[in-house]
Image 1 (tube, rainbow, N blue to C red):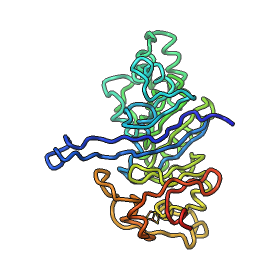
Image 2: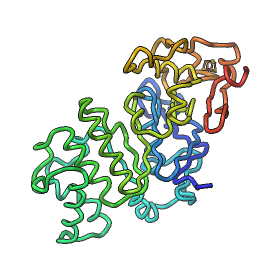
Image 3: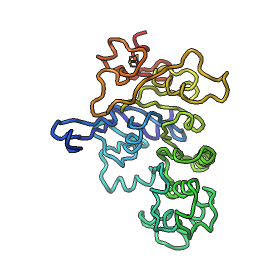
Image 4: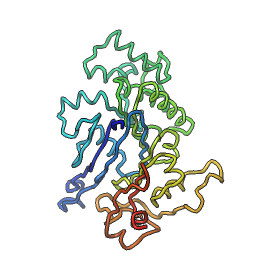
Length: 328
Ligand code: SF4
């Protein structure tokens, strides 16, 4: 059996909210951004990670590539435990793990020309400015579909889609194996989103990349993902192959997210499975007891307020955290 490229077990990121503001100070509150999450991503796979804003998906992505230190749990990359790696070892590993950000303009230094921006990771890792570095940068420009005349220009001279291409070139210049795409197309127009998603798929095929593709919108991850994980308030509540998630979602929250995706044709709508959820996502500072979704769930049962449902395999590769499933 193939080994996962990256995996996490019991991963948690809690923030001490005592210093977060005058209302919270001194209460010993913890913001549970990510709580007891386990998942794995196979080489060459794209795992879509979806959920409402504030559910912890970006924090989880940053934990996996150790941009954030976890409060608890374990992360393994190519079989190696990386949770406790020191700065020097992480610096070396950083070449293999990169991130593409949502806001391409905010992520690019406006005072640097495109050549410097894309070459910067190479230089940080010891390359000298010169012919060889320029060659690598121009090759990457070709790969992301930007003209070579872009080298001497500055970020403000490009459109949003072109700036994201620059961000992608920068993230991939070190030839990483694992890339977190953190809402990488969310800020773009729909037509440009499709172009960037297609580009990411081409690059994945050509460079052997593995993606965690984070988005708040299930329609965006549909095209690119092999499997989809759904997060709610710091927890993964369902994970399965894309086809299963879209055709047979089992968690009430997943069903609600799917129901909110516009169907291309009325015949493709989910019949009899439409879920309506009310209200906003509760605060991760004081998450609901038991099942964290119980304050919004149309299927609330007494057990739901008392006991957190474990993520349980309902069929091969399909895991759901809901008492409706385990109590059936
Ligand atoms: Fe709803 Fe209960 Fe399932 Fe949570 S465990 S999703 S509250 S039915």
